[in-house]
Image (cartoon, rainbow, N blue to C red; front, side, top):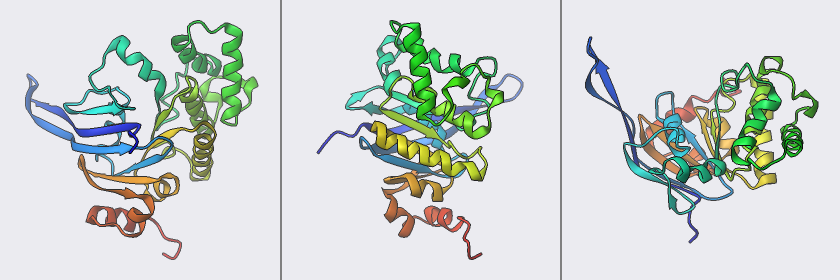
Length: 265
């Protein structure tokens, strides 16, 4: 049996609760509690749950923006949750993230060409300026944007276009695994399907692996091979997407399915 690309084992993340004038610690918030899951290469794991269920926390631990309280994260068989500095840099190229809010995830003071060139300068320092320029143009074409718009600022684009730029930035360093943290929830309904279809096309074209985080089970069902359900930091159900959406076992998953709007209602 092949090694999963991503393996999360008994992962817990606890945040201290502080109160009073001296901000003394009075307890803990268990954002994640003993979560274990795996993601096979070339597949999409949909991670669903209501706000506060721990979805984004899990994504940020995997991408190493947060440290776990306990447990481990392995990437392609190598444990990465304890890596620091230079040891972590190779995995920064392999694991990228598309953030929820395309308005706040792009620096408003930088032109789009600079935003997309920045990761190339960091991870490919020997790349020439002309090659960087060509790569930026290629990235914009890849996500369906005009490569001549590199001198525009983020505010000159629509929300859907900004999310395409966020996807292009994630693709800049040629990652293998992308964490999509509610990538369509801040967009108009008319644009959401375009972004979802773009992500699916890119996965097929570039052989990408996704962790697709969302609270909308209908969207997750459309893009995922496997679905994992989080409730209050605990993994309550996991399985093939079709099984989870047609025969959910856990009452929480059943409630999530029941909340999906129906054309008949």
